[in-house]
Each structure stands twice: as C-alpha cells, then as structure tokens.
Amino acid sequence: MSRADYKPRLVDHQVQDYLSALGAVVIEGPKWCGKTWTSSQASRSEFLLGSSEGNFQNKRLAELSPETVLVGETPRMLDEWQEVPLLWDAVRAEVDKRNLKGQFILTGSSTPNRKGILHSGAGRIGRIRMRPMSLYESGSSSGAVSLQAIISGGFSPVLNGEVHLLDLAAMVVRGGWPGNLSTPPETAGIVAKEYIKALLENDIRRVNEDSHLDVRKVHLLLRSLARNESTTSSIAVLKNDISGVDGENVDEDSLRNYMNVLSRLFLIDNQQPFAPAIRSSLRIKQSEKRHLADPSLACALLNLTAQGLINDLETFGFLFEALCVRDLRIYAEVFGAQLYHYQDYKNNEMDAVIEMPNEQWCGIEIKLGAKQIENAAHNLLRINDAIIKAGGRGASCLLVVCGLSNAAYQRPDGVFVVPITMLKP
Image 1 (cartoon, rainbow, N blue to C red):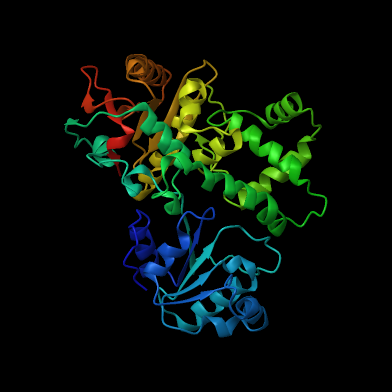
Image 2 (image 1 turned 45 degrees about the horizontal axis):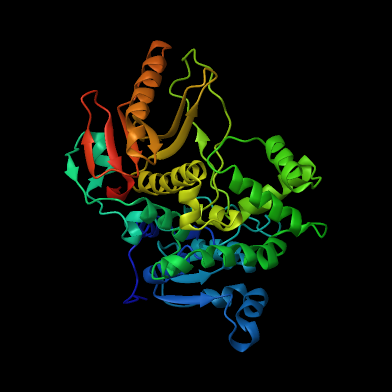
C-alpha cells in the first residue's frame, strides 16, 4: 500500500528480509516512531484495530472472531495487534495452516501481558524493534561517511559544512519523530511534551493491571530518568533522586514495577555492558547505561528548549550522547551489529561499543565540542591498550563521534573522527 509521501526508513530492508523468511513479522517500538506507515508501505491490505470507525467495531470484531480479520491480500497488516492479544495465536495458527512466507505484519506500541498468548511464535513470527528516526533518515545527516566502512576499513576523509551549536540543540529537542520533521524549531518541543502527557493519561494504565499504580510517581520516575540520561544510575540512585528533588517517598519494588511498565511501552532503550573477552583479567561492570527512547523526551520532562540546552552545556552533553547512541544503534543493526557501552572497575569508560557478528569491535567516544576530541582519542587508545595487556581482544578501530566539526578524518594515531551529521550505516 505505497504512500507517495512516505520517507524511507533504514528498517525497510529488514522488514522485507523477514517477510521472505518467515510467515509473519511483528514491528515493535514506541508510539509515533513510524511503525504504521512503514508496515503499511510493505503490506497489500490492512486491519486497524484502533480505528474509530463504526464506534471502534474493528476491535470488537477481532475479539469475537480473530480468524475473520486475517482475511485479505498478503502481506496483511494488523495495526496495534496487542489491543486483542488473542490475535497472536490466531496469526500463528494461520501461518501454520497456509505454510507460506510473508503473510502478516503486526505492529505494536506496547508489549501485552503474556496471559492469553499460548504460543511464542518461534519459527513463525519474527520481531523487529523500530526506533524514532536517525539523523540520516530525517535528512539532518549528509550520510557522507559509512559507519560500516569505518569498521571494515573502507574509510575516506570528507569535508563537511559548518555545524552550529544551536542546530544540534534543535535536533535534540525535535527528536526523531516523523511527524515532527516539518515543525518550526521554536515549537518542535511541543510534540514530545504531548507524548509524555498521552503516556501518563492513557497508555500507562492501558498496559498495567495494577489498580494501585500511581501516575504521579511514574511522572517523577520519568523526570528522574531524564535527569540521569546517559548514566549508569542504579534503582537506588533513582529512588534517592526522586526523594531528594521532589520529597516523595517511593519504594524500590514500586520503581521496578514502573520501570517494567515503561519498558513494555518501549520508552526505555538502555545500553547493555560490553566485555571484550572472557579471559581478560579486567573486571567489567555489568550496569546498563540508561536511555529514554528519544532525547527529546528528556528535554520535554526537564522543560528544556534548544536555547536552554546551550545555557546548560553539561546537560546538553548527556543528551547529545543520547542522540548519538540512538543513531549508532540504528545504524549498527542495519549491518547485523550490536551496540554496547564499556565500563570497568578501574574507571575506564567508552561511551559506546559496536560489536560485529564476527566479534570485531569498535570503541567509540561521543563529544559535543571539537576541543574535546584530543582527550577522547587518548582515552580510547589508553583503554584499548589496557584491554590488550589484560588479555582481552583489542578493538578493530577506534572512533570519536562529535558534534562541532566540519570534517571526517583519521588522526595520525589511527583514531577516526566523524561528526554525527555526516554519518550513515
């Protein structure tokens, strides 16, 4: 169902690959990230469970007769399938019955409770995680430099136009929401604020069975997560942060429950820790680095505008890192790689690590300003040397991803430097 105004997404090729290999694919991710349009672009018919036509009769029909809504040209899209969890088993059974590839595309902006879903769908239904747009997808990155080429040894230096601090701040505040691309910079932050409002007023209660859930405390947790964006803060730190700033008593069990709800809504997208080798004598910390689904959400929760970010460069640095991590994760997954972060007990840290399927890895530091590049490069070299000396597997390349630079190049010490506004998969 081709749309003339559809803006291509990097996940499009993965959707086609999954459809050629499996009977069905489910595309999951936060609301407003473009799942429905991407799925519609790849489908030939659709059934929208959230449609308001006929007093929301589509949802009732799916509840009464799940197999009826599966009839149509294939691939057939079932949008927001989690509203009727029985559809999962109906799709799985129909895929078995037809014994054909590429029959259904399911989209979901939350993970339903497993109750009522009898089968995992293994071997029949594949899962794809979709995220808000990267800068390359939205047109804010020239795409002059390929991340995969850097890792595989195909890099060539490139000059770029001047990048302004206010433009980078505006990219963080705007976020990767497809519906926000044409919004004027001065009002772009409204979308993320409305996102948070809709989340608190509707979505949280819809996915949570606990009638005692305190929406105000969930809001406090979200604000704490925004304040701790791009850090490895523990649950205890979040609890103390909420209590210290807002004077609210929140127990850790409740916080874990609220975190689970936010995860089911794909609002949390943390970085897992990386270990370069099992036999290494370095002790690796196992803490996740915390990220919301998009840095614009942190801006909305902290009431930050683009100018406000410039006035608070420390916070800007953390949120710029979040933007880069969002993009690096999207790019890495295009060529089958995974994104991590590195932190050991000797206080060695790398902002990001990309591990290839062949176990080659690239260590990455993320810096907003050009004056920070020198220290970032030395830090990467020092950590890589320490890993090798401890018996670990050294990096295949080291990279500084920056904001304020007008060129992508390789330093004499071998470290690559690339502005985020020039990067693509």
